[in-house]
Length: 305
Image (cartoon, rainbow, N blue to C red; front, side):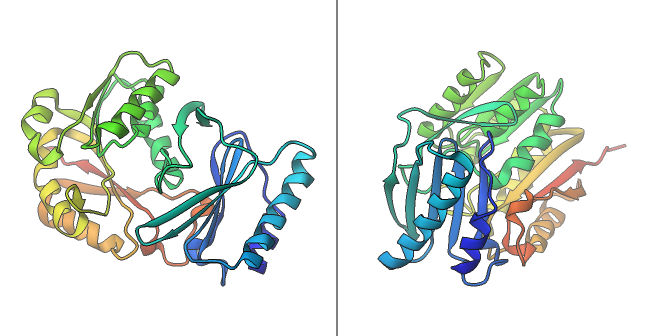
């Protein structure tokens, strides 16, 4: 854990939400199980394996020392989460978590919930994807598939999109997404569809076509989406929703599936899409094996002459 301790002594606590330490990337041998996130005003320490009480105390001490060095007497709010498979245990170590916890990213506000499960309301590794949408949605209609809490939608409307259609099976996640729009004073311009995407092609087609489509599905969620079989189903239909010269972001966050997997799926099932670029992940999420990190690929629909 020495590398974690050394790295923590260099971190800062910016205004915006961010990951501070990414052990999962394999760049800190012996610390692959540890991550530290900043959801102002709360630090979240996550471990993907069980730790002895003495190990936890060492980690807490290192975090507290850096906090005091940077923030002085300002109260420390620290949450610890232990994950293993489907098991999640979360506890407040010091301080408190705001009852309504609002964080910021690039001028946008988002509601997060650190004490409820593994998904906190905003995926930090997707920050560059949201930035791309923010910069490329002006005066366009955007389709946000697997919308979750609608971070892409907020980013698109920040970027002056004409309209965003959000669709997700989870009405609870979409409810938080609606709150995120209200937080950012977006009272119009977004639709929220609590439907199964694979049963909603007619509705999506009627509302389209779209100049930007974002697909950020779960990688292995039974009853919703399993990438190894469902990405093909998705890609067979998606191009018909996209305008000629429209852009599509295809996302895959499955360490066991490579970049080549996604590119081969597109080549086989969506031959009208032309690869443009792979979006870089935020620097803190650098991985010794890029295939294990988040993959975000941008495609453009070829003009049919």
